[in-house]
Length: 262
Length: 170
Image (cartoon, rainbow over all chains, first blue to last red; front, side, top):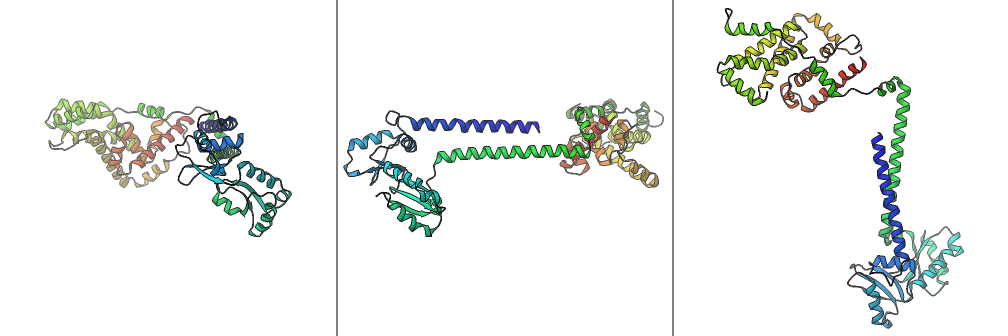
């Protein structure tokens, strides 16, 4: 039992240290200067922009269905090739696609903040959450029921000219763009909670057993305190009990083999 | 003595080499006698079984076909002991019921290890003595007793645990 606790404790320490090590890394990436660091993965660049601020001409970045990172640029037709090259140079990927967007990420984010602090959002039970939909260059608002969609649609459309779409919460679950980093964190954290649960259960079982048996037969605890005899010792003791036949046994065999006159 | 040496001696015995027979007797006399004694719990019966085993060995034909002499010796010892127990039971049917009642571990006190072994259930005792005194492998015991290997192992361990408890209580 002690060994099990020890192993579980080591596993817990290992996973908790892993979780603590990963978080500061992502934060340091985010806070670093985007322009001066070596090329990013598309997700790294997204994080860096989210924490360090998006450029004014960028509407966002996402991974396209064909696996190529897509950068949404405001007024793409008028963006110079140099600017495009600058953005491409930030990414580690060989090919990068550009897409036209009407609003910059900062504009979308501003509207998002206004929605989130809107008195109706805070007070109402119908509002679930809101997010920037980079792919469609809009702000998405999630509500609990279909009946509430028109209400929120009219409410948030007046905030600014940015496109705001109100959808059902279930749609959010279905189309959610899964953030791999957060999944990894939540997995390791979940594992820690699971292991803590297992540890707690084992301790409960152990203490229950201890008290239960102690109540039933207190003598058992006195007995277990004595060092147990090993099974090899028992075998040796049994072997020591080997018996020897008397000499007349062989004489009798000899007599039977050679005949009575031998 | 390894199995090759035993095979050489056995072949020599089959050719009538009396010295080889003596060497085999010296090799097996104690384990055979002890196994018989533990199974029968009677010295004179054990001595007779020992004699019978060695006489069978001496009179083996040249084409005996025995591959594992050790396993053969203890299989014969066990069979002769079982035959003797059966014949004894028919004669002393009343006494045997008394003996069965003695197979209880309620009171270990004033018993030595030999007595405790003699009070073990027959099958457990067979496995224990054939492995410890006879030096047979569990697989060989399983073949002799016609019971699964897992059962042999489980019974052996259970018996040792019982004996350990006895020794700890002493």
